[in-house]
Length: 306
Image (cartoon, rainbow, N blue to C red; front, side, top):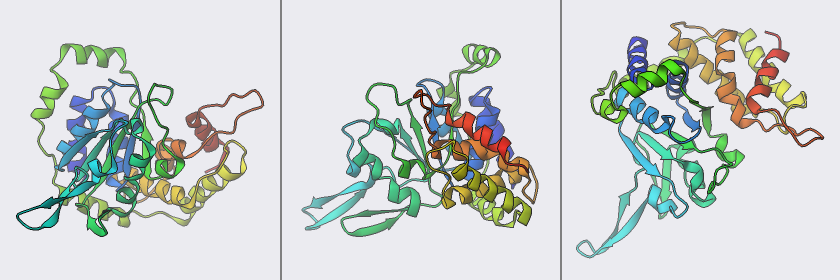
């Protein structure tokens, strides 16, 4: 099963050149059953990565371009009166899919952003007093522009906490960018991508994570990291219990991709920054400056012995 996951990773890596780590992190996030937030500048491949992941995993894919005038009904769907039936008929929105790409999610208003909360947490949508289940598996891959750019609405902490991981692609290195310039158009490459595994196989792999053993000492290490985040004074608030559970689940997925049936501290460290950095807000110093959350999470890792 995990051979097919590696095949999917290789296939995505042919489209997203020079970003093997980010592709692996994204795959681990989906394997763990979590939602993914891609935060970076426009034009570095966030949308292409999302589409390539959906195609390689054999999942149905929908994309929503978030704008300031987007309404919650544009995402969830709307009931329309049909004269022939003499009744209102619900027309599902684009959220009824297996992979939803919420493109530039922080350009939508908070009201529309909050419309995703129930779907991300409960895998269901409530409209007109009726609760409708979403397809399985269901993932939200959201892209976010830096908050200093014009026309953005920062995501609230409650919504950030719904994303299992937050990663950045960054600029490609010189060799990768040269390969991009000389190679085939990425959108044309997407048309030729076929599924490396099916949705049912992905769900089986997700269920297999329950068999990945986490020793009591490993649980103690995850607990110590959570406790240190609340006590070391780096952050305004520490990691929540849900964040600690997310860290352990992501570490299990990383161990599975490494071909192991048990979790090592190195697995926890490999996913610590993408799982925790977006959940932690630095405490500003007396001079009004703050280290980036990612740097502080690395300091947190160094401060907690294995």
